Image (tube, rainbow, N blue to C red; front, side):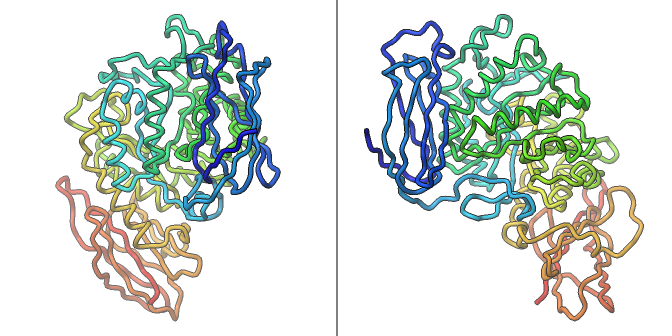
Length: 533
């Protein structure tokens, strides 16, 4: 029995080579490893075939102390059998991201640190890397800017309707054997997966998280062809993804499908059978992916409410990656109206965690208008949409035409990105986000036009209150009496702070935002902070 020195929450890999020749090593033999923790807990981890008669097992220990392990093959293969011990020593690390509904904004690291999610959408990141784009520099820049999550998909989408061709694609990124015309779902494209490994390892070194989307849009092949992509191939596919990547700290979420209501036939509308699929596959993923990463779904249709959708199995899905774009027409796209109201309806009664994971892709006018729905998603939509989502106490993931999918301008950031950095600084440096909850009752009753209503967050004891005014103007707050407050204005366009005047009596305080408007004549938005001295 061999002994290996290991460290807590670090990926360790076992390489096993067989002297036998298998006709199809992806399916003719199955490799599993059983790890027993010092506490007695047992974890069964799938291995995966990696070419040249080589199988690998990747494991990330979550306890300090002496572990034992046993690797076996079915059918029996003496070359693919191994057993031994791991002596796991501690190290300082945040550990895995965990869903913690009701605490902070629904997410903590294993260290106990609350997580403010700020993400970007780069669906085809792995494909871009495989085609030679400078993905490493992009990952470093996003990390340095303070992003901690990227939405990525293992299956690459070479096209998105109506006219979204991936012009950057110069190599095949089909992840299976065969081709789209003659698929071999019992084999995997190892050349492509070795590129994915490189990107995942870089994210691991940077401390950057991935939302790993296991099945891409359900309107595209093979996910829209369930008579061909049968459950046996689906499970083989998901098991392979889990075997290769579940051990990595950078896997923050396993998302079953992008807009999961496309299941089973690629037709986009709400279907109860899609909920049944999500619950079944959520349970299946949790059984195979035993490192315990968050299992999530990403919605297309916003209703019915998710508490209703998953009531039959409340523990199958841990988190909703919630999509709602708000207004995006010529007249009101800048205002992103309706986001907070839809979040309230869709997440009413939801017992799990959630992220505001998609609310449009900021348009780059220098690029062809391949997506008419993006035309009026300007930097103003980026900024206001983010603040509306954050004031629902949700982490934020946005996307930009430069990098979300069909285009690949990875070396330049669009104007609205800086607004997200100001938002991150506000919630992580100026107010204690993890202690704050929506507090609409603090805003005195009034009548507001659509999209104009102020939004409030506050700590439980009301020692910190924040109010977002989407169009500036006046707001009256009902604050605890007897508490001296100081008030400041935070400018979401620049990140600057300035003193705010307050006037009122008997706990009702009136605030008037600084005046101003942008080049299009839209009134400025402001954030008010009131904290007790």
